[in-house]
Image (spheres, one colour):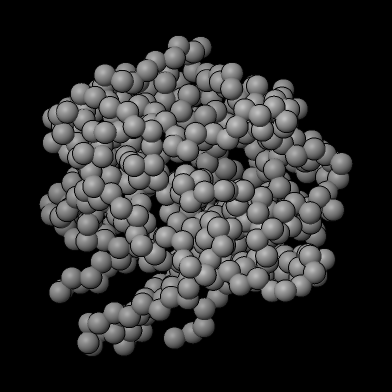
Length: 494
């Protein structure tokens, strides 16, 4: 077989003797596979595998992870027979022996003892070399531009920007807020004379059930992050119809937020189990029904610092589970590349000391040194999905979706009644979602006052509306996958 390329990919190769599956260095694109006595099936789609298996076997462990984290959890699929291939791994099937072998390089952070200035030179060089080798037709690829560091890093590293176009999306009101992603992105585009388009993600007038089904079909229910898609995927449909082939996305692994406890690592990465939440009646019912434990491989090792363990969890869970799921939502419409996740850059980042990775300190320094005097945003352009899930139209649909025999079979009568009794409604203008008061006030609180107020509670509160939406995802995906298997048995696919 040939060598392993760099880039963002899920690679499938075969000859008369072997089948080979390969993921990129961080697993930014997911490969699912299953092996039976009679068949070996691999795909980027769980639904496709269920279709070819012609039956569906629900995975209750994935139900638990969806309820606690809003994802399918580490390595899990909706079907208990289907596995995902980890990042930076190769699976080789020997056709004659019918045996598989998985080769995977461990994620190790090994700081090199160099002055900070030398680390900066080396990381900047790795970024420049990555973009020097990037050949993009800007008539077919577009840059999603925010007001933060990641997409600005891409913008600054693209040497020839002639013909480059940028796109930003969020609430209509965000364009008027000078601290917001939308406002700052527009200012950046204007500075560099780049064509810029802004899409509103305010709730579409389409039926909510139609929007939710589109969300589940596009992403196969891998994640609960609905807020950026409440326009009914209008952004992605328009980009596709405008002739674009893909987006240059700013997913990265330069380092994560400051943490002081293991619990903060799990919460920041979304690797949450029920016991991570505050004790409430709803949390108690979930704990009693669903036993959960994180894989031992995600525990901090003796030779790891808190910072290196934090960033390993980012590489082994957050990117291949959460970020890859978000890419899946776009891939039915358009391709995605992540140049900041190139092997050359990732390997250099893993040689940095903790203090240069924490809060992306070295990336911030590099981008800041190259950037024009335009502020960096500290507020997102899209609405909080927690706020969205409290709107009347959505709460009504969630009630309808989980107050059903199917939901009570999958989740239990007791849990369904507890969820239905605790969801809340916050009335807002039809078709719009306002940002919460907290979102408006937070950026204006002085750092000294934040410190006096103390750190956030050790355990986050469990939001009943979020749990209701995750329950809805479980019920709808189970129905959809059963329908896929039934369609296969009858020789048709909807």
